Length: 241
Image (cartoon, rainbow, N blue to C red; front, side, top):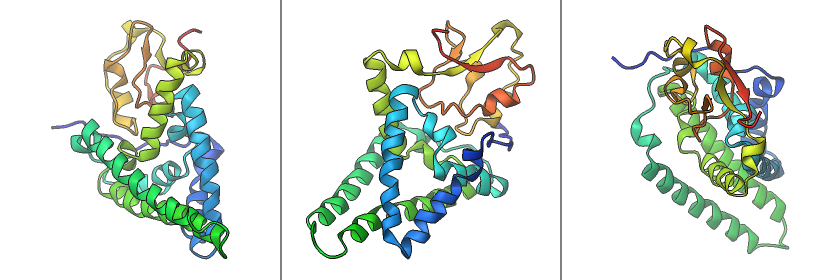
């Protein structure tokens, strides 16, 4: 029998509780006012900048779609194990190429219409339609499998990992990133609670490094494992602290 994943509160800040409203504003409201989609440009810029310094922090703490999945869909989700195929490097890369090709094609088609009537609406609608597709497709996966299924191969998540690696290469991320840290490894009873509540179904208790940190690139620093550790051994710390 596989791991029995546990549903628990994942929203510890105001942003995480209500960011899902932005998803509805853009995905639904954008059908009436396409210019709302232009706000997504700021979302993309924000996630790339934060990733350079803190990895996938945006996914766990700010992302509107993630808020939607965790707040509205988690209660009705089957909360099953995420298929390995959807987490494989080949699938993630293939989907990223497919997504970016289609997205770029749509953007270029609109850019070629620069100066025409309704240009801003057409550009905004590219983002609106993308947001709507993610909400529908990601929402379906969230219900049928687990809330963060889409996040495993989300193109924005892939872009964050690329930005993060650049931050690591520049020697900046090591100074700014915080990771899940265990205070006393010898006290860990290997109950696996941190894994059972992890939105990404990662296994912190099996992967702490020599600095007592969980430095998996997929970690979204959401602190769900920290809040649920029965012995209160976990916290978010910079490895240089």
